[in-house]
Every structure is written in C-alpha cells, then in structure tokens.
Figure 1 (tube, rainbow, N blue to C red):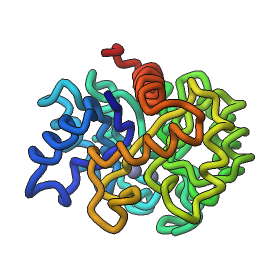
Figure 2 (cartoon, helix red, strand yellow):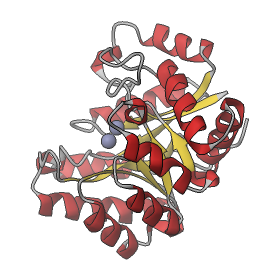
Figure 3 (cartoon, rainbow, N blue to C red):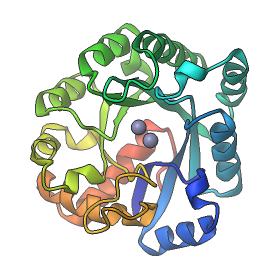
Length: 259
Ligand SMILES: [Zn+2]
Ligand SMILES: [Zn+2]
C-alpha cells in the first residue's frame, strides 16, 4: 500500500479521465493521496477540497504556488482563509521559494511564504514547501516561522545531500519525486540515506516529472511504484518496508489515521 503525498490530480490535465486515473492508482496499490490545491488561482484549492470531500482516500492542501504569488489578490487570501480550517484540508501548501524560474518577484515569494506559515500556525496544520535553488533563504524563513512546531514537508526535494541533512536536522520531512529515478540525479540518490527513515516521503507531483520508465508521459499517481523502487534501494530497504514506512510517515505528518 502506497501513499502519494503530492499529486495535482485536480488539474485540467486529468479532466478527461480522472476516474480512470484514480482507479489505476488503486489497482497499482496507491491507496491514498494528497491533492495539492495551489496551482494558479484558488480554483485549484476549491477543486482539491471538492475531490477530498467525495473520496475518503484523498486529502487536500490549499495555498498559492510561489510561481503564482505575484498575481495574488485579497480575494485569493480570503479563499485560503476560508478553506484552511476545512476538515479535509491536511496542510497549507505548496508554498515556498522558486529562484530557478523566478516567475514571481523573490521579495513577493518570501512575504507570501511567511504569511502562509502564519496561516498554518493559526489552523495548527503542517506546511508543504516547494523550494528550488533557494534552500538557504527557505531555511531562514522556516526557522523564523517555527515550522518545526507544526510539521514541515520539503516536497520534490532537489537540493544537495547537505541540504537534505540540514532539513533532517530541523526535523522536517523530505519527499522524493520521480526525479530520483533520472540518470543525472545521483546527488538525489545520495541524499536518500541521509534522511532519517521516519522523515522519508514519496510523491508523484503528477502530471509533472514522470519517473523512468514513464518519463515524458503525463505522470499519474499509479506511477509512484517506480519512484518507490528506487528510493527503497537507496535507503537500503525492501519495497514493502519502504511502502509501509512512507505510509506511516505521511499519515503522521498530515495527522491522518493510519490504515
Ligand atoms: Zn512544487
Ligand atoms: Zn506540486
């Protein structure tokens, strides 16, 4: 039984065949998933919560992605503040800093990140963080925002082994996506054993970043099996051990009852 800790199945990429995608996930052993309602405007948050209300194996997060915070209005904030306490919303995110794409001004990203951290404290829920090429600034904001007290996931980790170690020392969870299966990603595979087993998560981040051998296709939660195989090998665990450990970890950080 696997838990996809980060999937964007609310998105338009899945409008034509969402039910089939979810059926295929279950058939592949992916029994649970967290849908990230944070892409573009807050209709993503609304759609994710609606999916989580309909399906007892799906939970939602809400926020505005760092790519899109430059467009955020007071109305967007109002939606997030309304949805944050919703019982099917298990975290605030994805929020964070992306200095690789710089789609929003860095200062705007930092202010929004700190504000989402405050919202997470207010509703006593963990944060899911998207950090790319910005790990030093992110750690400063996360420490200042006392993220360790509410729980913190560094999703789709792409930092160095030292970054992984630094997050682990702060007690944060580190989540690996399909990137870990790519040939050029040896530093990521080296980072896996540096994350304590009880802080390890896996995710698809679908529809993006399909793992090998599905690379280039639209990613979907069922494909997480391939990522799990590689992470298990790097962590020195069997597939079954990795599956049950990451299931336990994901339930713990999102305060979901274990199956
Ligand atoms: Zn992300
Ligand atoms: Zn994402």
